[in-house]
Amino acid sequence: MGKCRASFFSRKMISPWDRWYTTSCCLCCHVRTGTIILGVWYMLINAVVLLILLSALNDPVQYHYHLTSAELGTDLDVMDDANMCIAAAISLLMILICGMATYGAYKQHAAWIIPFFCYQIFDFALNALVAISVMVYPNTIQDYLEQLPGTFPYKEDLMSTNNICLVLAVLVFIGCILAFKAYLIACVWNCYRYVSGRGTTEVLVYVTTNDTTVLLPSYEEVVAIPPKEPPPE
Image (cartoon, rainbow, N blue to C red; front, side, top):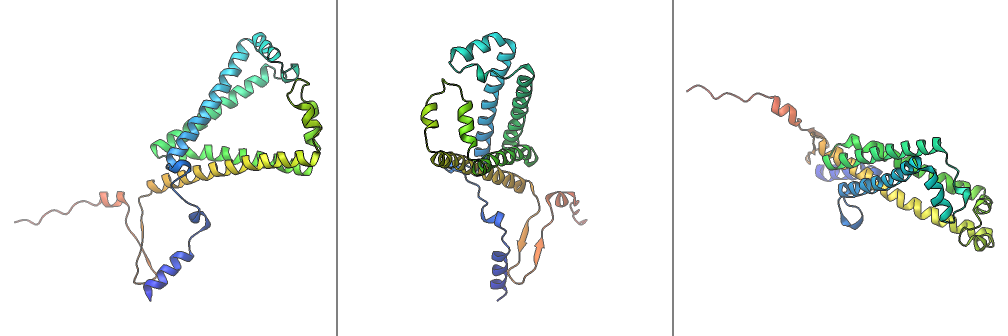
């Protein structure tokens, strides 16, 4: 009877976070491996952006030539030196945050993963606000298309599309992005839980004879206990 009651309470006290907790992610790899791959991928993207911004700051005339030669128009050339410096600083900060997450997942330091997890939450919230703004103000898509340069491919076809179909297509696209970002957030969160759980030295053991629990002593407390000397012969 006591064993059945203990198993019943243990199933009932499982939190929703524990139900979604797993140590595997896409391609059946570990969440630590997935977090490391994700951190390295973000670092590479931000490193490329940083190199482009630094080269543009170093030679702005050549940067303007590449924009016009690519038939993008002069409307995209709106970033001055101050904005480029701010964008370069943000890219450098992102490289630092992604590096911390990669190091924390590799060395199993849970605190190093928190900044990258917070960035993911912030990025998800921004994309969710974009989706909400599209639903509330659907005419903003047409206004955005009108601001694109005339050399933008398929601009006339997009402008002639029905506004409702265009809004639905944009919402489906943003929804897929949000679902993918939510999956990446869950992967990083599970990695944080796994690493923080590995660093915990206290273990809870449920006694099956009653409803009480026994907390075993930590590893540091066991090591601190001096060994007993053998009795004199």
